[in-house]
Amino acid sequence: MSTRAARWWWRVSEAPTLRVCALYPDLMNIYADRGNLIVLRRRCEWRGLGFRLRSAGLGEPLEPGTADLYYIGGGQDRDQALCARDLAERKRDVLRAEAARGAVVLAVCGGYQLLGHEYELGGETLPGVGLVDLRTVRAQGPRLIGNAAIEVELSPGQRRVLAGFENHGGRTHLGPDARPLGRVLSGHGNNGTDGQEGVRSGNVIGTYLHGPLLPKNAWFADWLIETALSLREPLAPLDDELEQAAHALARRAAGLP
Ligand code: GLN
Image (cartoon, rainbow, N blue to C red; front, side, top):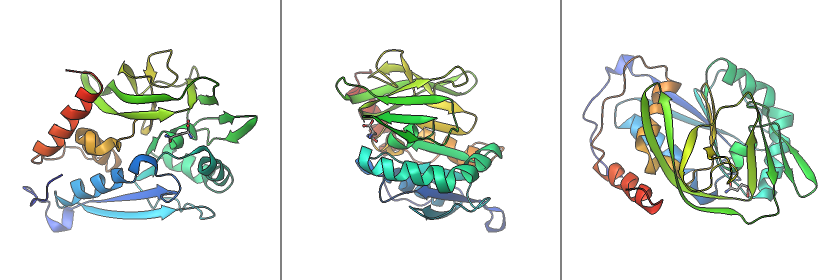
């Protein structure tokens, strides 16, 4: 990402502020997933938008109404187990209420697995937050690893590609009330068998794509900002030459033209 002056500003008095809450940023940060937060910050600041980041770790409650976007990254099974219990005991109700009022929830890999009903893992069942109708099971087979690309349609008629990297032992199965985030173009997706990747339910999004995700898919970062702030107009474009190159590289790594 280059440093550059924003080409476009809000009038200071009107500039909205994106308020982000990162859940367990120290424990759930595999493959530098925290980089997604840096992208959100920069893309807000380059446009003169405010950006405020708070975090909620183990033992810390969520305060209702204090964030527009909740974020959780991926993690190893051991760290995930700690977070799963804390999430279920201390944060589940507020997170569900926040999602119900339209806050964006973005969860990557290990975080994504915790959005569902449960994660079954070697005889142990980790609780999920039940935000979406899905279950994850740690299967006997090999880990699902590699570059991946999916086709998503976040706005009707607008199909776009998200490209990234996946590495998970868990297989996620969507229930009848859940819709995938996208269709697998390349890679394994939720479970390596049904061609589905991630989940989307309104503003709640889960995906297996690391990379981190947003540096490789800057357009998606903008969609998240617009959605979290309920902007009526699309954000002004930035000089995204480097971001587009990163996206093109990630697509090619996944075998797409
Ligand atoms: N521990 C989980 C799994 O292996 C998630 C891993 C990750 O976040 N990359 O399925």
